[in-house]
Length: 422
Ligand code: IMP
Image (spheres, rainbow, N blue to C red):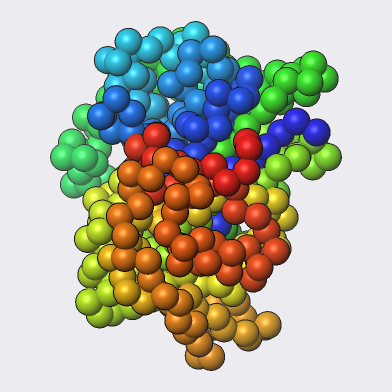
């Protein structure tokens, strides 16, 4: 049993990247298992901010092997940009990064389709990050997608053209001229040339059946950390469908997205903010539309790290927390951004009890708790936390029956309090 998993258990943006970065030194291998460049995992150290979209957050530790698993979808352009950022801080990720040959490629046409599908949805749009995630997973499930492994085959150009033509025909049929489309300010053809160049560079990395690497590591009792992307409430099966992402962000995704058995999983860390945020459209039962949401947004710097969009804010939703804990079998909670609540004289948590619909906001009830009104961001020891904050933590542990093992009090690597020895 030597795989531990870190999962976001809200609507993403919980701070998983920071937690994976902190836990990484205890592991031999760190893996991503789903999602793609819709994710933005932020890690801050030495006063500098690093945002990873596709590459596992263990990459900053050169002695750790990082794996992009089969369940991930990869855009070579984003991937190479990330690699260049890492090279610029004197890392050489080619040494400690493997890519599953079964991970699927996000093609330029997938980004176009994401945009077109969203536009066609009109008022019902998902609020996608428009990184091509949905159309890539759609092609994967429709069994016509292109894996990274395919890009090593002699007939890849033919496969690429066939898939591209398939989608361009659909666009033609819908009256959309591909030559009118721009991606990141480039014409479609210019962007495609950049993409092909990036793919050629990506092919120089180690592209293999990563499940064998993981099985061998498990037999050798190596320690593996699996890093989730997005959050449980965006899961394709258990989230606020259809306002979700296109992968399984919950625990099952770790098994299918890496090819590891469920019996290898030990700890499951559930990362949650001390309040709730959501970027994009869809239900959010405890959402606030008042000064408090503005305050949470401002103090928490709640702006999407991938898209720069402001995040919607609300109180922590206990019912959804419990739902996510039950779906994932969370063994340890990690409470993030506690310092954002430092200025409030009263804080609230929401509860709603419709057993048939976890996302129903009709019967929502707010529970009031006293605030602590003290700066927590420089505290070094759990015992020195304000009493009312400790009471809040006790309350959450009692409600969920899950221990809170870490409390984050600021964005940097150092601002973490370990309640239990990790
Ligand atoms: P897509 O996965 O880019 O298609 O986006 C689908 C929904 O998931 C949208 O509401 C996005 O805002 C949301 N989403 C996707 N990735 C993330 C993430 O990493 N953090 C937060 N929200 C995300």
